[in-house]
Amino acid sequence: MSPTTKNPRNQYLRTDRMPHIWCPGCGLGTTINCFITAVEECGLPLDLISVVSGIGCTGRIAGYLKLDSFHTTHGRPIPFATGLKLANPKLKVVVFSGDGDLCAIGGNHFIHAARRNMDLTIICVNNFTYGMTGGQVTPTTPMEAVSSTTPYGNIEEPFNLPFLADCSGAVYVARWTTFHVRQAAKAMREAIQKNGFSFVEIISPCPTLYGRRNKLGDGLKMMQAFKDNSVVCNDADTRSVALDFRGKIACGKFVDREKTSFLDMYNTKMAERFGPFYEPYEGVK
Amino acid sequence: MAEAKKPKSPKGTVAINVELCKGCGFCIAFCPSGVLEFSDKFNSKGYHPPHAANPEKCVGCGLCGMYCPDFAIFGTRNKEVA
Image (cartoon, rainbow over all chains, first blue to last red; front, side, top):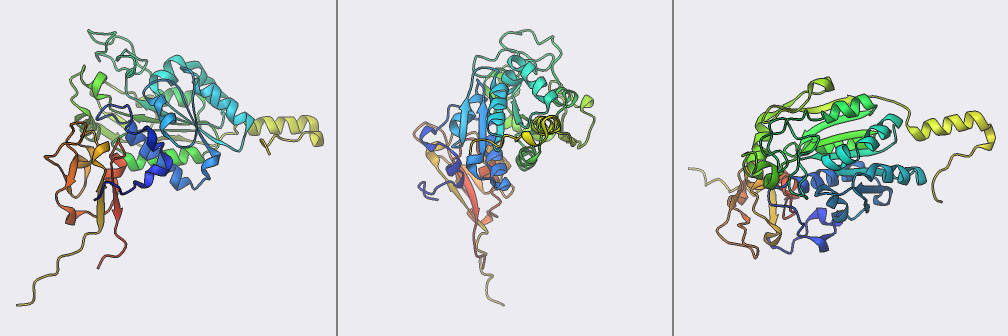
């Protein structure tokens, strides 16, 4: 009970930066807890895990994790992570970013990395808004939802992120909310262990800018809404898992398939072409 | 009349770092055993941190630590349960 007792998660966190900047009731810290659990369960040496983030509230995650972490420019965590992976193929590269960063500004990078099947793990924390810049509309804001740039309700059809990842060629697609901590941790572990482009969407509450404008209550009330409204449908068709405003949230593991990753494909092709002269690059010795 | 039942020792312990807490209430709402409650005290930022109102009920599942977005609380399972 004494405040000096050390949290076992502190070895993965830059505790000198705590308390963090996120609002009370934000789900990002919960997502970090899930990720730390996934990393612990993987049993990989921490030197071999690297986290890349973009800009935004979620982009701050790289700054709080005591791993090799990079805070890159807006929308470009996937090109950065691709370079990191190709320069050192032994690394497990995790891209941890928000919906606006990955699917609006970095939308093209996202679909092309999925098409190439780059061996990356993408964790997209979807809070339906741009939290850091004042609650503007994003490509994932549901229809009718109010944001600072759509004061009378959003009229644009939102992205269905699992379907986008699935049809672009991702090998692992899952969606969970911040209420499903154990399942999210398991999905992240499976995504890290999977060889190829794996995508995990985490639905997270943004009480300050999304919940307040849409009268969804504080963080706790939004979490309870996730608990009441989520439906687990593993292996569902990703076309059917689009999100509605205040509607049901389809959760689960939707896609898990085997495909040759970019690096394996490249090495096979070059070995075919150059035979014994080709030596696959194994990273810095 | 047999002697009164010995009180069971709790299976888990919960530790709270009150200064990191932002009072979101996730741990209180999602603790499966109902161990935690908001305390009347304030921390230095003016939030009400939780306190273990029923520590004997703790089973050491660690869910409070999984939910806490501020890394302020964690539960551990006690090694030996008599």
